Length: 165
Image (tube, rainbow, N blue to C red; front, side, top):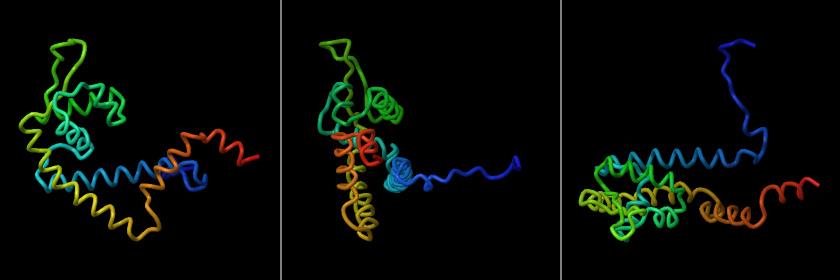
């Protein structure tokens, strides 16, 4: 085999085994296109920070761990997102005066201005996704949630062994 030959892997040859990869690739496309909408709206932060910013707009001076729990993020991922928002001047992180072990996060004035822009951009993203989904059967978001809940109830290991037997 030639050393410079294109290396490809046929994911489709394995059926649904790599379904998560397809969802991940879809997420990347949606994120990239959402970032473009954000840029066009004059928003400086990436779209993947929108949910954190919106949550902070509703709950000022929030402990980091509560933010992570509310968004379903790991502590590490949330810290990375907070650091990114700090770099953009949108949030500030500081020690809780009543418990120095805890960190609190709040939006800055710049962050509140960004949230207003985000709130105007999100309906464009929502409408675009709804438009592309209108050409397909059913509610994909609901189907993905249903599959997630079904797998939490009965994992792949059980389902796969039962279906294989």
